[in-house]
Image 1 (cartoon, rainbow, N blue to C red):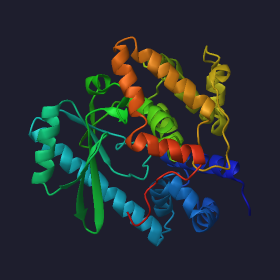
Image 2 (image 1 turned 120 degrees about the vertical axis):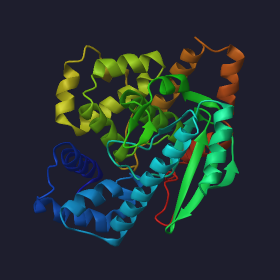
Image 3 (image 1 turned 30 degrees about the vertical axis):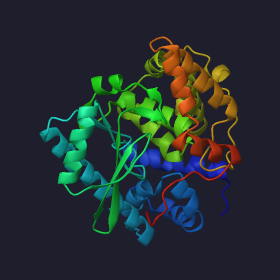
Length: 344
C-alpha cells in the first residue's frame, strides 16, 4: 500500500492525536501493519519529524518493539529523568530557572534540555550546580552555554540560555515566561499558553522548519488545557507573533476537520492573513519566505514599542551570526534541518 506525503502527515496526525487524547488504538492491531510499513520505509521521515518517541509508546501498547524504537524511548526517559534531577538540584539552590521545549504534551524526540535562567547570577549558579552533579562544559556560544554528561551510554546535552533568542534576537520575552512558570512532572517549566507560543515562534522564526511533532504538540496542548483560539490570537498579537500563530492554525485545520469547524466560529479572517505556501513533499515543512519576512517585520515593529531603536537594530544584525546564519543558509538552499542522528 503506497501513501503520499500529505496523506502520511494526515494519517499519522490522526492516529497519534487520538492515541494521546483518548488512548485510542492501544489495543487496535488494525493500525499496526501500516505503522510497521512506515517504520521500515520512512525512518528518515520519522526522525526529521521527531515522531519516534511517540510512535514507540504507541507501538509498545500494541506489543510491538524494534531496536530503533527501544533506543529512542530509552534515550527519552533518560533525558526526562535528568530534567527532574537538574530541576530538583537547581531549585534547592534557589536558582531562578525554567525548562522550555522539554515538558511537552506530545513526547517529541528531545534534542537537548533547554534551560532559561533569569539573570547572570542565576547563570553562574546554574553552571556550578551542573558541575557538582557531573556535567562538563563543552561550549560557550552567543545563544547558549552547552553542558554534557554521559549516562548509561547516552550523551545528555544541556543548554543554558539567558534569553529565548535567535542569535541575540529575542523572539519571546523571558519576563512573561517567568511570570507564568508552572511545575509539571517534577520539572519547573513553561505554562501551557507560553509553551504554545514558544513552539510557534521557535519553529518558524528560529529553526525555520515545522515538524509533525510540533503540530501534534500544538493540537494536544490546546485540547488538554482547553485553550481558546481567541485567547491565543490576542496573546500572539501582544508579542508580534500573529503571523506564525496563524500559520499553525492554518496547518492544524488541514490535518484536523474538527479544528477546521472550530476556526469557522472564530471571529477572525485568519486565512486572509496567512502568507505562506507549504510544500508537503518537503519534510519537515518549511514556512514560506512570504511568511518568514512578515513574521520578523511584525516582531520587530512590536519590539520598538518597548526597546530603543539602537537596541532593536543590534538584535536584528545579530541574526547574521552564529546559528541564526547557519539556519538561514540551510533554509535558503533547502537542506535538511540539523535534527540529531540516532547515534547522538
